[in-house]
Image (cartoon, rainbow over all chains, first blue to last red):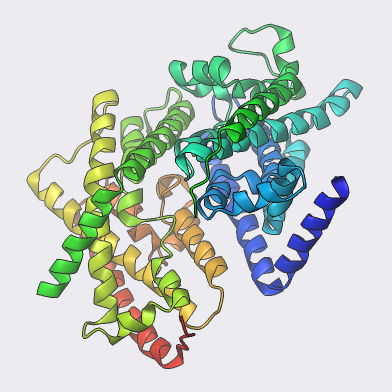
Length: 266
Length: 263
């Protein structure tokens, strides 16, 4: 199974490398975006001093972490990108895949692997490392051990959202734009300390879509910052459960969706 | 002019057909607007005025920026490029109508429809839920409308030029994406350019990008006046005309280079 996946990805990578100049352009473009959005943020924070008591380095930690994870997710889950997946459904390519004697999920994972996302991943990593330099975190064994779990849970969380968005296209045949609010909007929202948002928005992203536990609460733990919202200490350690939970739910929804899938007939 | 008008009306009708997309776009714009407003509120904290902008000014800024995304099509516009790669460009060029004006008419229709479908509701929402700053005189409204039209013209020429690169290159998507990102950052869309260090703002103003967003919004807020106001509007006008001329020149040499593959 896994070998088939690797082979499909290999084909993707080779074909994308055929346009080497195009690939390099796009990777640079993606890196420039994240770099510029951070530079503009840095300018603004410099002007104001801080955001709700968070320094540039601390914001950079939130920002770099989520960029890094989102970049990894965006590369691994490219096949489930609702926009992309909706097109496959519309063009009837999903029907072709369903006819092949290979697990459908593996095929979708292997159907798209966007190399230029490397730009975003590297940029996120650079910002994260610079931020860590700036704020001089008190590293403990627990923090070091926990960091990979946080990144994994962020990848799973956004991946789950992509799968949910993709499943919707079984019925709508095109990507539902509101999903973008949770994926792209969510990642932008999580790059700021989430206690700054209006009550209804924060509550929504705490209790309905628990995004707050994915980045903000773990960051409070890494940076040893007090919690202005007064949740119990373990709130910082919920991330992995939420990551796995969202992905699990998305899998259930997907299974339900694919059982009821009716082709467009094209 | 009659043809221009007709193309424009057709384009408006086309936009009206995609109501669902407009509503979805509206929600996204509102969400990001709220996000920016929250960030700015946190940034201001207990401060009243920063570099000449009050918090209300700044929040209004985020509202207008979101309201004109659709109008200016700030993030994406690949239609011309796609018509080149599909071969449809051949029939468009054969038409007895200037190619630049042909696309301009379509884009004007698109822009006006977006302004009404997405721009107005966003501003109404902002007016209901925030203390927004509005122009205080009829004259200010008039100047704002004028600069908004110029902003559209500049943004259109820029997108037209980016798309024209498809006349030379077999895969121009990367260039277009990069071009859109440039306008995204340097136009003041993300944050009012005033917050940036002075040298950086000046650098931005050497390009046409601030005239897509920052200039018009500052005029709406009434934070530029007197000689500065005249100066900035004149600069905007020069950029608008300059980019139209450049578009014509590039188009001329592009047509000579264009190779259309059989469709």
